[in-house]
Amino acid sequence: MRLWGGRFEAEPDRLVQEFTQSIDFDRRLFPFDILGSIAHCRMLARQGIIETAEAARIEGGLRQIAEEVQRGEIVANHALEDVHTHVEARLREIIGPVAGKLHTARSRNDQVALDLRLFLRTTTLETLEAITSLQTALHERAAEWREVVAPGYTHVQRAQPVLLAHHLLAYHEMLSRDIGRFKDAYPRMSVLPLGSGALAGVPYPIDRAYVAELLGFPAISRNSMDAVGDRDFVVEYLAAASLTMAHLSRLAEEVVLWTSSEFGYLQLSDSYTTGSSIMPQKKNSDVAELVRGKVGRVYGHLTGLLVTIKGLPLAYNRDLQEDKEALFDAVDTLLASVTVTAGMLRSARVNPERLAAAAGAGFSLATDVADYLVNRGVPFREAHHLVGQVVQRCQALDCDLAGLPLAEYRQISPHFEANVLAIDVWTSINARDIPGGTAASRVAAALIDAREETRGFSTWLAQERERLSGCLSL
Image 1 (cartoon, rainbow, N blue to C red):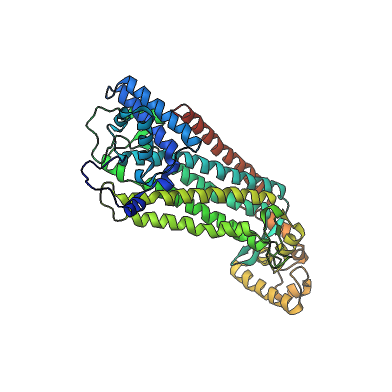
Image 2 (cartoon, rainbow, N blue to C red):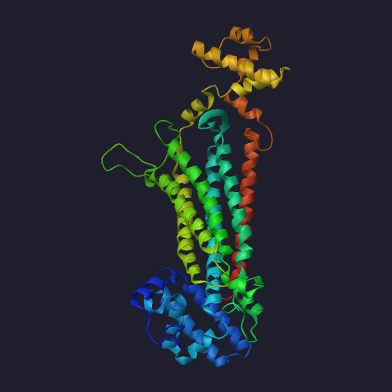
């Protein structure tokens, strides 16, 4: 049984069946297709388009199919093409010809658009929960390592000392922007397309607002042609996912570097590392490397879908079948990457001594010495030049800034006094006592704000889950 074919005299070629089928991947839409069908069925009965008794039989059959899907009893048949046909074919087996009335006043075009929106709405909430969990892991480590100093880098060169907690909270900010993007896209995916038919609407007295209420959609689509051809909401998810993956990759890159023997700042537990098949001593940060490597897949899916939709005329075109594999793989990749990154962070241990030694090495306090001169009335550009000479002198004498004799300092500038030798990592850090700075008091406050912000996101998630729990469910 196909949902079309009345005008065809020949069966589709076997190769065509294999090429056009989507059940191998869109079968994960079964619960959403059934849920949308139940809502549609109830509306048809409420509007008198089908009999109440018929609607009861249809809904009973659909709920039986949902149970069979949950038990893994539905066998894919490529001749039935897609998830929608499998549901209707099985429904006909259960309740007979009355199953054919379910498709009244809808098309596969608006049906699949609804299924995708239902799937993506659920997926977006799962994504937000995973990201907030990762933020919580960052907060836990920031609190635990709040007194650990670390070298800050620019151009992968030691630049200025920072608190390690400050470094970690930078990733909180990235993830907060990611949450904002997913949350911002959420209302646009929560729009009901059902009722648009194939492209022009349907000639039945349907009640779209009632279906939207049943399914928890705050809005219905305003143009039937746009509704069936729109995949912007999928692109938005993929775009937000791509940026999240970029942020995970930046963190993963630092884990890879910091766990190397050259850095030695960080150590991962055995549970989040792997070994070498030939070198017994190896302990590789393969989890971080894989997170870094999977970014390209998500980027590729975003680019692929953008290319797919760029030249499509209105309204629906079969090209849009290509959206699902891209979306499903991106979702799986993102959720796995976020979750494993949180576990990897929780497993990590730092080497505070090595971090502290690196934080003060490599003339990382040179800017503080320049600021010292500025506070004594020297213009910053002149101070910058003078401290450059100080660094040259240190290199000539093979010492660091604290080891350079005061006489050498004063030979370069009379503005230097004995207290220049008191500049150290902690004076540098606590001098940055401004909003957004790395001073201990500012980082402590930022951690409180970060936790509160994540709790706020979690509260919104709980409220949205509660709202949807009052809607139609299987």
